Length: 252
Image 1 (spheres, rainbow, N blue to C red):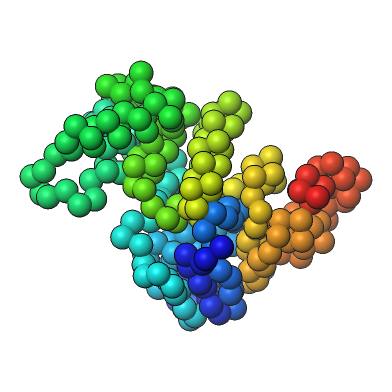
Image 2: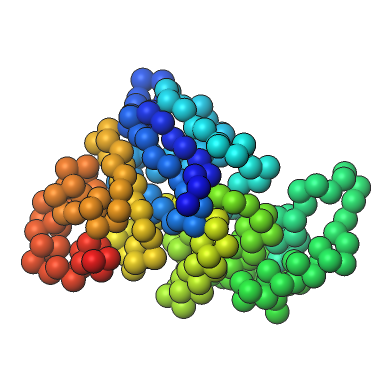
């Protein structure tokens, strides 16, 4: 599959602190990349660099077909203020605003697209509800509808399942599977070694100043997870006693 983004010798961090260096990967169309690491390892910093919000310390981000006009982005739930006084349909509609003039509104086709996205996300009946009345899972579904309407080739999701139940997680994963079938690349920051990894072909493990990329089963081994500070040795020993708990066993 063609690469949407080529990352070469990337180093990220801040003045006086390098989080990792020498990362070279291609993010290809139709792939799903899981980004994991201990707190402070650089997961959200990596997402911000792809969005162009912070510059690399060194290295290059190259877009073979040119940087997309739109990159789909879903921030952590803790970064979102649900007290903002808008309705669910208004939140979703923000994803369809690209290309509209300052005083332009959505036409009928645009409004139909918004309704279809809300319906697929499972929140169309809540379209006229205020955001502050939503549960965490309902708000996350509405935010997914907004990302759908961005119609972007690259979609970045920062902890998308942190505030949702199992049913909502499975529903959102089905939407992500559709994005992959459409040839979009999806990068998601995940907090733990959950069943989400069953849906990811590639993993990027950050920690200990190192960025390790490859197939899930080759990257997320107990030995590597300990070496990069994601697991303690006792946690890794438990994983080795129970092979079914290992992501490698689920992806074999």
